[in-house]
Image 1 (spheres, rainbow, N blue to C red):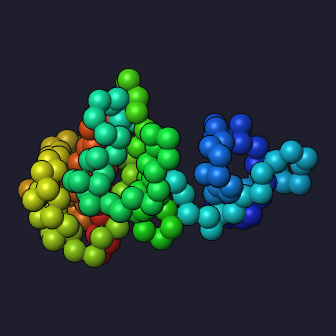
Image 2: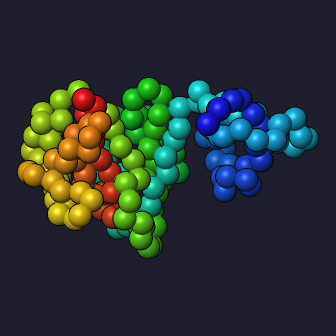
Length: 164
């Protein structure tokens, strides 16, 4: 697909503007130059929003278990740095998520060392034994990489991946 800079209406992508938080988004090719649209760029680092249970401190899993650094906090919201300018922002929800596919993934240089660090912080690494995916000690060889998965308190499936 040929990705390029374009303009997009926030309603096209289901975004709700948060003051100072959404200025540009990455998008596929499409209409451009219409009145009332937001300028977008495929080079803008993303912010991922995820749902977590309403109990406890929003995002404590991301700080305490994953060791992510807080970028900023405001009015009950928190944003964590994820590298390369990208961020993750867990928010309170009464339902969490029902989606079982991977919601976010981090590239790592040493999967074994990262897994040891996660396990030492109490993160449970998932095991899979399905026709399309089998793990051993939490790790799957997916052809182009080795990967491991875990969930946050909201049931969001997250992964770490080491390219070959």
